[in-house]
Length: 405
Ligand code: HAM
Image (cartoon, rainbow, N blue to C red):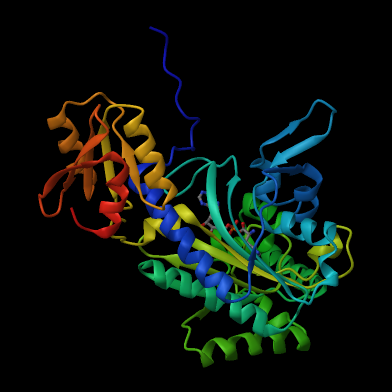
């Protein structure tokens, strides 16, 4: 026997109860987001590598180490999408969406790919629900997006949810702050490896060396007036609707496109990979990708992490109305007729004995079983009442619709 081939590391199959739970999550997300005016967008699974190199940022872990990139036959570098915001901004430009009423609100449920070390809650192919609002810098956009993600997590029953928010201000304010922070690091940190890491992104030191950074200057104190007002307005709106949050002056997100608001929802129910969903404002991204300066804001939440963080009751599979066995083509035709009229019908496909047919119908919770005979008749049994009758094959659906035998 030849060796079996298994799924690549960090990927998985979705089936059975997991598939049902994902369907249920998708329905909840669709309902919440479409009620708020978001319409569905689906972008390609791969894009020009340049989109992510420019959009996500060349110094990020995602672009440096985690992209699945390949060359196509024409020598173009393509990349399996590691995230959805840059593709949605590309689509916004490509379809002239700036001509629509702004902001344009889009949502997605798609798979994404990152070559990370797999562990609990961290995969190489994973799914995200995401929402992006492009074309408005109103702080209510940021607050509304946060409220929608909070509502999604609450509806799904996610446990131990906490929200942290911060503001990164403008790239200029951030650049000035960066110099200030690097000066602090040079004076106060003596670990050469840490200093070297700080050159890439000094904000990360708040995570990796919290003790030495305790007295470091904070970005929030370095924001300009307009950014400070924007952040205050977002917080006020969240306070108004009673969303609990913690202001985190050192919140770092793994993508470079953020300006002003950033936020992250974590769950205590998850292990090391506690980030359930996060996002923020990206007012410079569309311009960075070659478009007119256009503000935007959004988030994405990991489907696997949302499911892991919620103790969900198993979703019941859809009920079966009719299970059909016996002579063909009569049995085959009956199933097709039943489905055409909107019923969930199953045909016996495993050559079961009559006893086996009833056992299988029982397992599926089928309401009716029809055993089709060679004589244009069928034995129709109501599995709920136990009643059984011989009826003309052509009248089976009539009997079922009437709810009586
Ligand atoms: P992100 O924080 O990189 O943001 O990812 C969002 C969520 O995707 C995370 O909170 C996590 O739940 C899930 N996730 C990320 N990587 C993995 C992985 N390897 N395995 C399982 N789940 C994962 C973004 O992707 C931004 N595009 C969000 C955004 C939208 N910002 C503005 N708009």
